[in-house]
Image 1 (cartoon, rainbow over the protein chains, first blue to last red):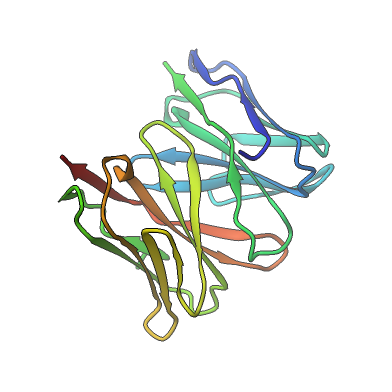
Image 2 (image 1 turned 120 degrees about the vertical axis):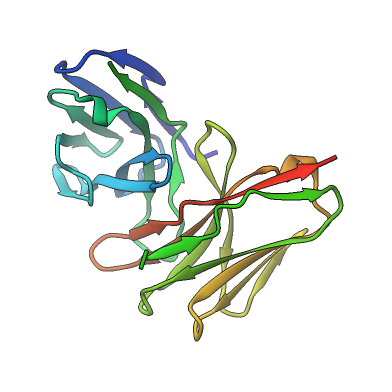
Length: 113
Length: 111
């Protein structure tokens, strides 16, 4: 399995609180991605990173921010969590070459009450 | 029209059966294609890449039809352990690897 670790694996929190999810990789891949997965929508890209301090928005970035201070770590922050952000969050890593597949972490189940 | 479309299923098939899934994509500039498998409450895992000439990995065969813009996955001699959701994945390059996921086709193999 690709060396990707997400933490926490599960979290329950209240509306309005800040939440940070962490993704750690040991593969030294340049690209890292945060997705959310909801029934009926498939996986949707929130933000991605193409290097240290280099990040950009995906299709569902509103309400989320990211940071990448080291190659191996990519953080996803919900500044003020809302119930609509209840979801399963997956981190993925990828190489530059689009012919190569992405590999996913185990996921974080986040519930916002 | 969705960028990537899959029949959600479920496909309920007996052990030993052959089952096929199709996936259509809308962007003719799509470059790479993959099938992932996702078990309930788990992360997607790469099953196989899909090459233009078609490719096989044991009981699994993947095909690409660029003219009609679809990919397919054929599973022969289905096992109980094949029960999962199969995600079709299409990529474009352009600064980063733009990946579009289908919503998945659920397969249930029945004893």
